[in-house]
Image 1 (cartoon, rainbow, N blue to C red):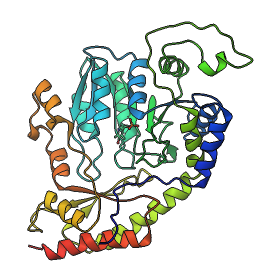
Image 2: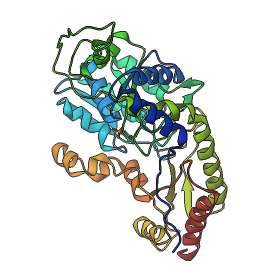
Image 3: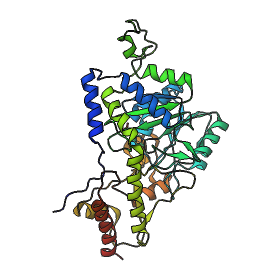
Image 4: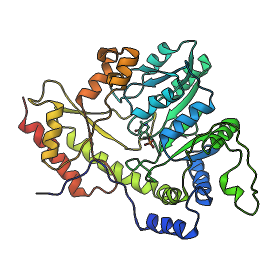
Length: 385
Ligand SMILES: *Cc1c(COP(=O)(O)O)cnc(C)c1O
C-alpha cells in the first residue's frame, strides 16, 4: 500500500524548532517580546498600522466585532459558503448573521447580494477571501461606506495576497488572519487582527486580555508596575511567545512556501485543462493568489459517480481531500433559528455539491502531486459517462 497523502500538513523546519526552543529557554512562554516583534513584522508585511496577535482567527473576529460596537439585534452580513467561525462570532454578541450567496466562478461573496442585504440594522459585513484569492473587496468597501457600516475581513485563507497592489490587511476596517495548523502561515493555533484605527486597536488589545488596561508583560518588566485597571469584562485571547516564535520564522518563509504552492497549482491547472469532467476556479485578475485551497468542481453529466463517491474513491487511492464548505444555512443551528431553506442560496449549494479541495501545501513532493493528478484524471476516465 502506498503512503497516504494527507489533505494538509504544516511546514515546520529546523528554524521554527530552534526559535521555539529559544523561546522556551528564555522563560517568556506566554505573551512577551516575541509576540511584540511578530505583531510588528506581520503588520508591516501587510502594510497595516496595528497588529494584535490573538490565539485564533475566531477570537480575532469576535474581538473585531466587539471593538466596532456590534450589539444584540444588530445584523452582520456573511457569506453562507464559509467556515463556522465567520458566523458564530456574530452570535456570540447576540447579533444576527445575515447570509448571502457567492459567485460561481471563484466562490467569493457576491457584492450585489451584499448590497441587497443591507438594512437599517446592518452594523458590519464580514467578507471572506475564499481559498487564497481576494473577494471584490473594493466594491464591498464602497457599499459599506455608502451605508455607513464597517468591514471586518475574514482573511483566514489569504496571506499573503494583494488586490491591485495593496495587501489584504490594509484595505478594510479590521482584517483577521488565521495561523491555524492548516493555513498558509501557522503558529499551531493563532491569529492576527490588523487595523489602521488607533481606537479599535486599543480596544482589541484591552479586550484580548481580560479587559485590563496594560499589557501583562509590561507589568512584570523593569519599566512596568504592579498596577492595572479592568475596563470591561474582556476575554482570554492573547497569543503565547511559543506560538509567536513559530510565526516569526514562518513569516520569513512565507514567500518560499508560497512559491511551492504556486508550482503545485500550475501542475494541477495544466493536468486538468484537458479533463472535461472537472472545472477549476477562475483566477481573478484583480488579486494575487495565496494558493491556500485548490478546488475542483465535478461537471454535471460527465461522470457515473457523484461527488461523495469520488471522494471515497480518492481515499481508496490514498489521497486525503476536503470540502470547502458545507454552507452555513443548511446546518441545523442556522436552518432552525432563521428558517433558511437549501434553495435560498443556489450558487453556494451548487458549489458545495460539486466541490473537492485537493491537497496543496509546501511539504508535498513531486511524486505526491503526480499521484493526485493521476488519481483525479484516472477516476474521471474510469467513471466516464
Ligand atoms: C480557519 C478559518 C477560520 C478560523 O480560524 P481559526 O484560527 O481556526 O480560529 C475562520 N474563517 C475561515 C474562512 C477559516 O477557514
